[in-house]
Length: 121
Length: 109
Image (cartoon, rainbow over all chains, first blue to last red; front, side, top):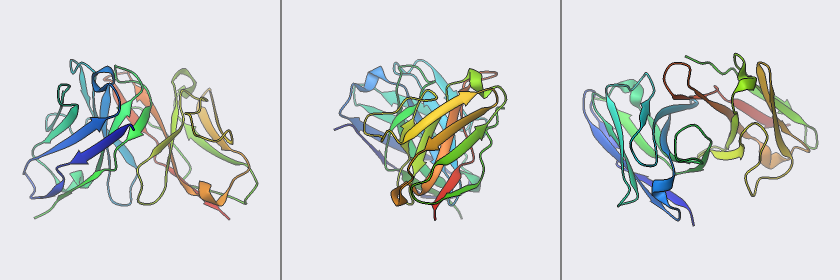
């Protein structure tokens, strides 16, 4: 069964850091691009970042550029999102999503269940 | 940055057809994907590349894309179709970024 399982969410103070993980199973992880998508409470979906299957190409939303870093360990079938200089507006459920191609640019066909990040003092 | 515009809400009676639009500048030149999200759940892909359906998605779900508007059409609407629907594209005009529409709440009357 194809599955994505996020972890690492929690409560963090403004200016703090957090690292999210997404463990993948049931498919050849290195063959597919992956993305992080977030959803603030009661709001719509917002794309955050994407990484190619090889990890050689990364892309970021303007709202997180310079603060967040996406990476992957294909030997561990795991996707990461390092979040620094967190702000209240980063509060959201963070989903990892598998893409249909090896390079970012297609649909998100598999989603994790999400992990909640709350930035508050 | 590229903007996708969806109506906040659409209402339809059971058995009727729902049409949810997604507007964007020359969106017809892009591949549009549609997601369904029910309360407390992760999104589910229902249409990709404008009009293709993933396996397991009923034929009642279809899509089209031309000019400045993409449309998700749900035929013979059922109570279980009530959800939020989001369109999505990739914008490569400046930097390669994913873009979601604001979402449309489909209410089945």
